[in-house]
Image 1 (cartoon, protein in one colour):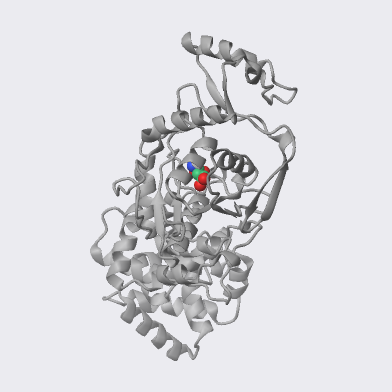
Image 2 (cartoon, rainbow, N blue to C red):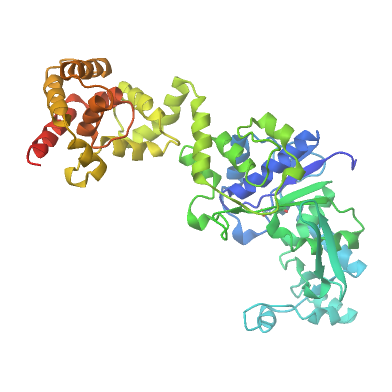
Length: 481
Ligand code: GLU
């Protein structure tokens, strides 16, 4: 394969949902391939049968599609180096593992589970003692002829320094003594990740490997495999973790770590893509919003950071709000409707439309509709009013304003935004009050809050009965203050 041509890959394991860290690896890899007119390959690493989750491949494909990533080769897009499911490449791994045995860089290991158990140290860690490395040729042949189950292990050097170069982290070195003779091929002839990633990256002609830095410490071992086979080593780019805070990785245990979770909550795919692209990579200027095309053009390896970036949900909300602004009224309606239906399943189209207009000023993601709705429309709890509200209600003239509004609102036969605002203005004129001293009493008396969305729309949606009822209750209470 022509080494001049950049070939990158995304190699997810179908073990469940798509962690945003994995998606970010896919994005960077994709940007890099596209900006070099190279190929972006999708390889499904499904050799860990125990961790396989039904439907996870569909989730991967769906995620890539939503994120705007198209791959050149992979499931359903056969290229020259398939299959692209590792489970369908099983015979290959056995062949290459046996080749390593012939080269003296690997060996059969027939040790039983019980024997391995007995090697556990006080912390429960097993370090293989190379028992089977010392088996004679005859013993090995006899065991193979008897069909004794075996694994194939990599033979690590006895001493020396094993190193590799990472484009972000520089030269990584480990003492060979620290490396265990890891399993390459399991007894069911499935390869371990440690073996399959090397064989496949080579056979698929991968020139640049980008992946999470949790693989940084195992990569020296992979280098030994490349050397043993006499293969060219790809360029390595290990990416910093996405963090929940200074010391913890973003993980599913703490909720939002999955792309699907964000989608379900109403985050737009591109808002997520844009935000997570900036977690680990910084452009040379302060630009924040990027189209996919710009991300492809602007992404650069020297803009990648070494240290983890903290995932800030508020910042993602800001991005989402920015992208929501770009939707037309109709697109916004279609976007928000499912969330509004969770609040009221069978309201009129007009109600949904009005809610869209009302919430659009503030809503940062779809599922927030419920919280905002509850906030705006909740019953006023007079006892729970904040001191800010109570102090305001006690100001001179406020009672009178509410009382007059209450009387005038009752006379309205048409209750809509225009008639409401018109009435408020008339009351203002009659009482010679304006601005905050006019609108705020109205807001507080109908919502119990000093802040909220557009007043006319809000009152219209609350309905005349509710507004008047609330004002009456409040006036009653204020009289006995
Ligand atoms: N299957 C591995 C994972 O999902 C891929 C790591 C790699 O890119 O080499 O973490």
